[in-house]
Length: 311
Ligand code: CDT
Image 1 (cartoon, rainbow, N blue to C red):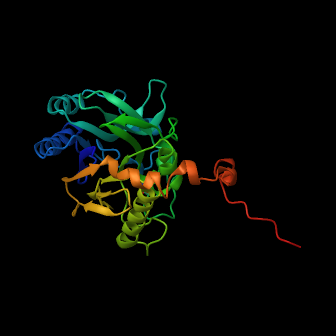
Image 2: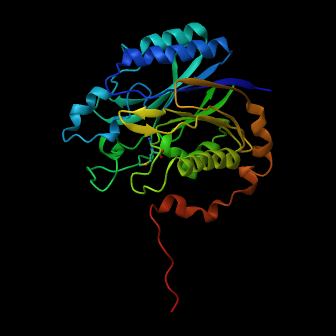
Image 3: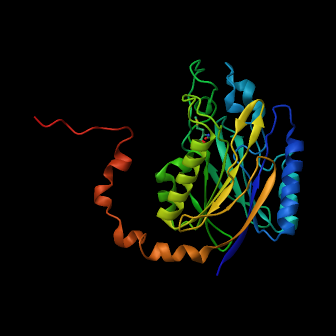
């Protein structure tokens, strides 16, 4: 048994006016609770330090550099790393990253239990659009403000096992999990900011959004025999509703824990990494069963190419 007691640390809404210092205080409160409850790993959401700013359009994107971190840890986040190290708890959270070369990424990091960053991931599947779109009920401008991640889907030795990260929209893509699955991933951790309505389809509300969320996570877990820990930023943020749905899937694809509500809150679960072995050694023993000679299209082609019509 290789148990990881994980704390999925959901954050309620972060309003535009809320300072980083105030958010870090909320994260620290969840960290303290997690340590009291014996967690060795705490996972926070995507863009955990700020409001979900890609919902706003600005002509001059440099105006939005205020939402980006140029150092991690930085002045406001150092306290989080220090406290996590003192408590012996590893942490993972998402933030907007601006590199020294001026590139912008939607990023998450993973630390060890001493507060050292041992893993970094930059979001690859950026949803939404580049320009203001008047046809949508709300904007989702991730493609405007971020570059697609350039680090692949790495998996890290952590917590006596193999842990990988992805971010929000990545969870809807089977490729995300499979690339990590091919590295033996035993726990996928991710944060998300998901509006509870579809900006292009008013009829698609919370129930359907939650269905697709669970469906994606459960399939990813089962098909790769891995734990999946998904953590929401939820509630009404600057007038826009983000769904909750912080949950944990076991390697058989079952949801084994789910956090109700849309406020700051901690979902704690014991995840035995050895529970991934059965699936990895039987139905999803990739080495025995995969047929890569038929998977060429997956990497050779982006969009759909329909077959030619027969005469
Ligand atoms: N943050 C994020 O990736 N949210 C998306 C919303 C999709 S709608 C453009 C998600 O997949 O949940």
